[in-house]
Amino acid sequence: MTDDIDILRVFCGPDGAHGNLLGVVREGRSVPGEEARRALARRLGYSETVFVDDRRRGTVDIHTPGARLPFAGHPVVGVAWLLGLETVETAAGSVPVRREGDLTWIRARARWAPARTLRQYGSAEEVQALAVPEPGEWVYAWAWQDEAAGRVRARAFPGRGDGVEEDEATGAAALLLADRLGRALTITQGAGSQIMAAPGPDGTTDVGGRVRAVTGTAG
Image (tube, rainbow, N blue to C red):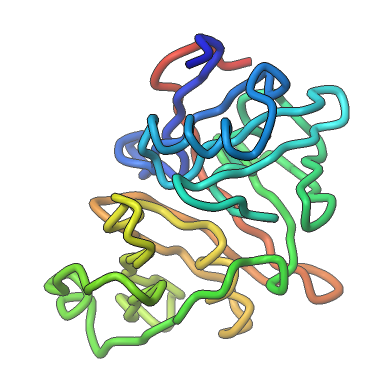
């Protein structure tokens, strides 16, 4: 395993707690080949690990423990924050970045996001009480906490059978939900992570949140 890995928490709550763990390999070329990258992602055990193949251009490669993803929200937000990038180049396309206070925002298209089943429930309490389903379907369970204010309670169940039973914070699913509803959302996911999402120009969607370093040096 390369020693050049930063561990971040992405989409932290307002108090800086929670967030989805992300591994960032700054020198992606030190782990060449899809199999080696997937093996490292499995070893880390996070929902995603991102490999930086060209820091100057912001080119990244994203892996779950079992697959390569053309785009994913929390890896792109995390690596943009860590490296101070203005654009992140993913396999799906170029992702612009902006910063507002302690929030890092990205702008992407719903068609870039991996397929998710967005399943609405009647209340936040129903979502909270859900048991982890059997593997097979990637489910984003959500309910309104306050519809007028755009506040949502959500949980995410990848269903991949790769050891990640529940995702603490999922930017791609938040993007899909904001795109479907056509409005700005503040999403509380998992144990207390927070994701901001809102429609952008020309059919894009903005996704933002707070990032904190667990190990390594943020810069």
